Length: 276
Image (tube, rainbow, N blue to C red; front, side):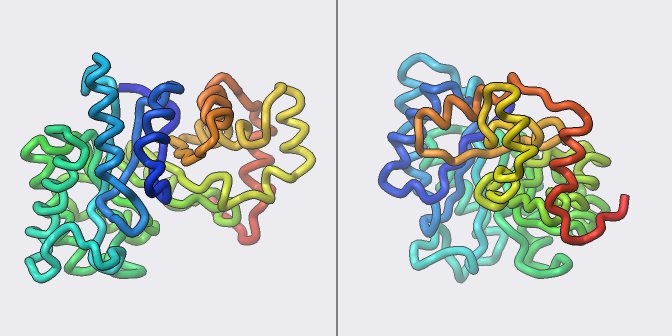
């Protein structure tokens, strides 16, 4: 299925169900979450989805993505046995996610972040092999990784049996909007999901040129950033809690920037030279 924006559910806590329901009502058809109680309330995402399906919407009409979060990213509410082998942890985590979300399969399942830096380590490969089995069994239609650098992604692309199909990263303007990772994704047809596009780059929306781009189109600077992101090959995420902003974010798909405007946003905040 095709969609132009994902709704992120992090940090919504007890408001999660109502906000996901509102996002679905406004027109979002792609939902991102994680089995990580520290930052997400995955069961309440499931409650919103269950109500949505009871209204007559088909499971196939919604793209649902969640994540396996390693023990280092969890608080005391670990959704699997932390003493079990890592592959078992993945198996337990996805089964709980399927139960939380009240679905039989996921559209996308991600490793929330590698255990090791700057390269991958043994634990990362154990998780990836478990994700490959999840994919083989049809429990997830795509597998991927979040919070990954270009060295890790290169290694994963080169050595994995099933190549990553999704990358989700916080996207900073100072790094050329994650230039190196996006370049790998483009070369291997990996969907690049960019999050924190607004919150990580508030100064970009304050540039007079970006404000002028918005005024010229009767839009907001935030809408310009989302339009830019799509035109350079990203799938943007938004986690807004405001109904008006949900509508504006979705409407940004109607905007188109010219080549000089895209080039300006690509380069306006660079603090390092990006080699192409």
